[in-house]
Every structure is written in C-alpha cells, then in structure tokens.
Length: 145
Image 1 (cartoon, rainbow, N blue to C red):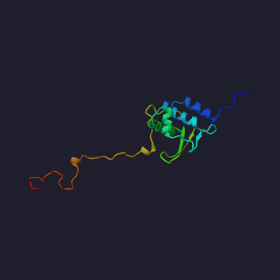
Image 2: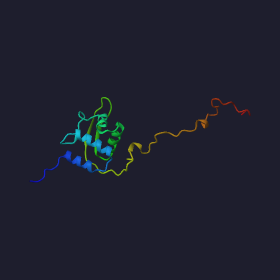
Image 3: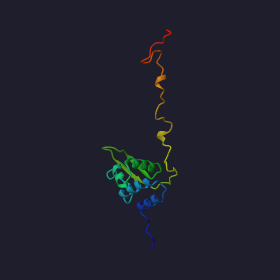
Image 4: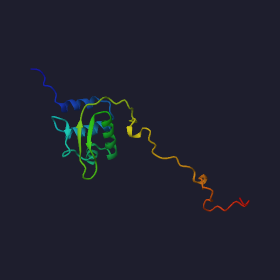
C-alpha cells in the first residue's frame, strides 16, 4: 500500500521548517498554522487571533509579531486581508513562499518608502530669512541702514 499524500496543512508545516526565514517569522507562522483550517490553511476573520495573542503564544513582542507578519507577507508566506484595531477584523491565508535572501536585517525595498522623504530639510533658525525685518531680540543696525 502506497503512502498517503500529505495534507496541505502538513505541506505548509514542512515548508516552514525547511525555510531559512528568521526564527520569529517561523514561530509566528506556526502559531497561525496551528489555528488555521486543516483543509485550506486559512483563518477566517471570525477565528483570526489578535496580534497580542500571537505575541503571548510565541514569546515575542507585539512589535516583533507585526514585523514577522510584514516579512512573511513580503515573501508570500502570508496573505493578510482586513485591518487591525478595535472593531476591525483580519483574515489570513497561509501559503508556502520562497526562501529569504534578505539577511538578518530584513531590509526590503517597500513601495511605500520609495522616493518619499520622511522628514523635510530644516534650516538653522538662527539664519532663517526674516523678510527684511529684525528677528526677535535683535536691535536695528547702529549704522542706520
């Protein structure tokens, strides 16, 4: 008798174990996989746990869970629909993705950050233009100009 084909859930479990993703990413993925539907490896909005619950279960902080989710989503391991926050619902779909070649820093070229400056250049306020007037605390030039 031949070996039974492995379920989708087991295939995902094997794939995440073989991946070279960071440990935090694998832990978050395994947590969501443990809650996912056995047949489809999906978490409907009704059953998707909060990020805080994922943090408690994995031993990582909420910030690390969010970072792991973004990284998993970037590489195609996780598809997130919906939004976070009070009264908001999310659903998750887990799929096998490619290995990560980002290095330990996980630096990616995010589309939202391309060509966008986060802060504007600021000039030294002591040399700012006063439109011909005097800055506060300065007296007129003694030469009469």
